[in-house]
Image 1 (tube, rainbow, N blue to C red):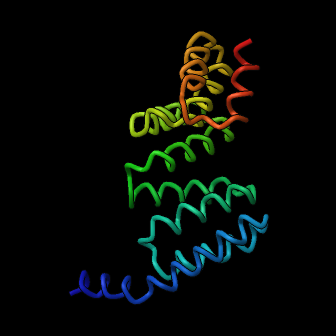
Image 2: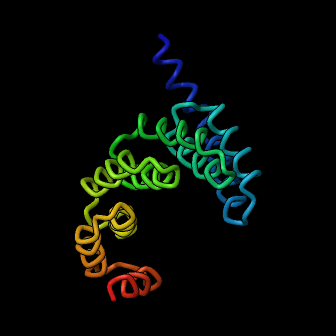
Image 3: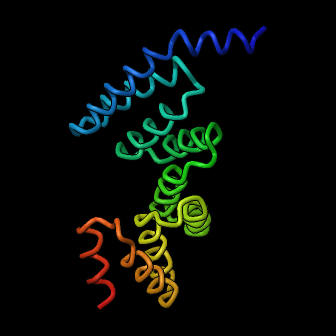
Length: 164
């Protein structure tokens, strides 16, 4: 019976959750991380099973320099949808900024298992390895990223400077 009620609840609140996520996304894109956090938190409160709401709440919290809370929500997002390469890459970046290099490396590698052409994850893993003194591994990753056809121009310019 609870399973049915849970599905019914999600169906009923789904449109409101989507509106809150859209509102939060607009606020986030306008640079209002605090307002975005409020919208995403309201979406999570309505539907704790919304992978998307947890993911975006984590991004807003990270921008607000609240990494522990951000990690909680990004991990919840992964609990709900574990094979999302973008989420693994963002968790890796959060861990990397927190100085948790081994955990970050594992998450970057998981993101790349799921999406081997994720240029940002390749570059970020290369940077983590470079900062850890693993220069040849980093250079190999930078070359791999530079060979990707869909890499944006800004990233390509940064890579070319690092490869000089």
